[in-house]
Length: 144
Image 1 (spheres, rainbow, N blue to C red):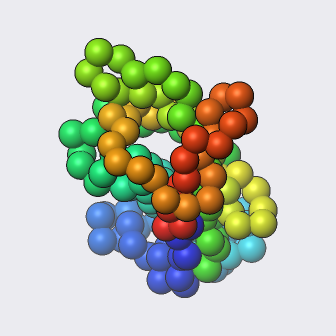
Image 2 (image 1 turned 90 degrees about the vertical axis):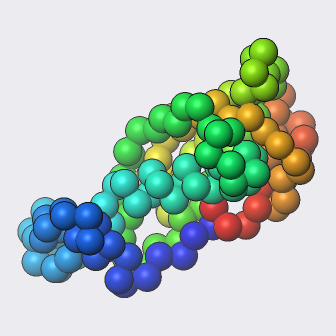
């Protein structure tokens, strides 16, 4: 889980994104979002960091691919929750396919069709990690 703050939407201004949709309420309200929204790269990066932290021992060498579909916006103050499933079987270099979905806590999916290739190391800790047959094989940490 990752709890955003009202300031989270301003983060990507530091990277040169001056789109007012991420900073002031008027553009988001006119577009039907009800106010500012957080840049999609935030949910993407927060999820990638969580997958790597949970399954790859926080070592960047342990993530080979990461892909997902942006499905809905995230608003400042939303809590992001990621669920992951190891698909089983690793390649000759130890990378295993992991599927994931990130949603706003109690609400819509914001990242769907998530897929990563991760060299899984150590034991994961937390609530949910299942194989494709639905049998629990480990846990995911709360901070995703």
